[in-house]
Length: 195
Image (tube, rainbow, N blue to C red; front, side, top):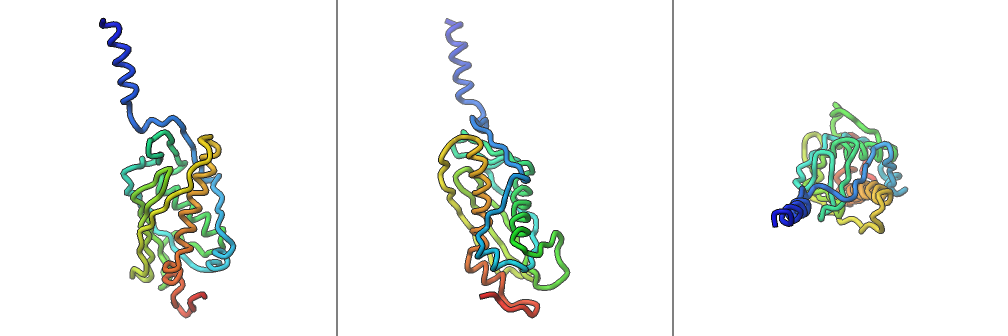
């Protein structure tokens, strides 16, 4: 009788094991991320100045270096901690768009400062609060909730490509927002807002 109970107990332990143990592991590397921002956004933002403040990860559904699917069968591990990984992806995208990018707070008044604080990041979506400052004054603040397109395959290579596309979606969703654009391009330091 005891011999039958022991294997059953082991099966129960394995089924009830740590929910963060994933069946599919996907590694995301910053050097493999390629920005894909539309030409119209590139034309609109080219030559604009921006300072990216540190990004903040307040998501309870992530690890320091990982985010997961909801079940969680899929684990995404980034080459930097999540907030730094996302920050560097933004840097690559904005630089590729031809923006003047500041790594330290600029002394020139009126340069836009972008902050991002995310409260959820999963295989299925992303929630974050975007704040835009100018001269220390909040000009724009909004919580964005994004749902990503379902994965067409559970192949790790496909999931990796999709994850980079999701990061591009996060970036583009901010830059496309008409209220964000109005706040970003409002008259400053002798420059006119862009049409």
